[in-house]
Image (cartoon, rainbow, N blue to C red):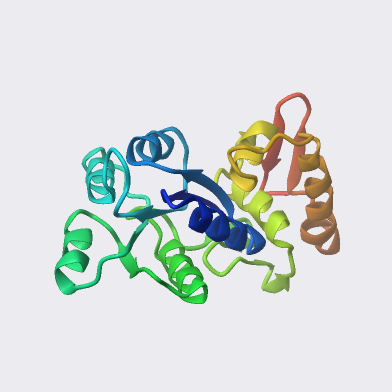
Length: 224
C-alpha cells in the first residue's frame, strides 16, 4: 500500500515514514502544501497523512483542493491544535479522520489501516481475482479459502497487480507501488518478489496466475 505523508517537521516525517515502511507501506514524503498537492495529483495513493500547519499552503487548503478536484483518496489530518472547532474544520474540508499531536504511533497505524479498509468512495475493500482474495486493509491474502502468509513487500507487489487484474503492469509501476518515490535500487528486485509470490500464491494451488509478459511487465490472470 502506498501512502503520501505531508509533514514539514522533518524529524517527525522521517520517524513516521520509517515506522510505516517497517509495516509494509511504501511512503512518499512532502514537506510543504504545494509539494504535497502536486504529488497527490501525480501519483495514486491508498491514503494521505496530511499535517495542518504546513508552509506555503496549509493542510485544510490542500485537502479542500483535492476534494474539489475529485480526488477522494482517504485523508487523515494531523494537527498540533486541540479542540472541537479544529476537528470540525478538518472534517468540513473533506478529511476522513484526524489525529492531534503528540500522537501514539500505534494509534496512527491502527487508524490509517481503518482508513484504507474503508477506502475511497468508490474503492472496494477487498480485491478478488478468480479465487484469490487480496485484502489491503488487513494485509491478508487467501486463495480458495486458504490463508497465505506474505511478507509486507510481497503483499505490496501482489496488491499492485490485483488492483489491475488482467492488465499488464510494468516493472516501473510496481516499483512505484511497492517502493517509495525516491527508490534508486536495482529494478530487477521486482523479479525476485514475483518469483517468491509464485511459490506461495500459485504453485501450492496448481495455478499459474502470475504471468510474465516479456518486455512489458506482469499480469495477474484470475482464469489460470
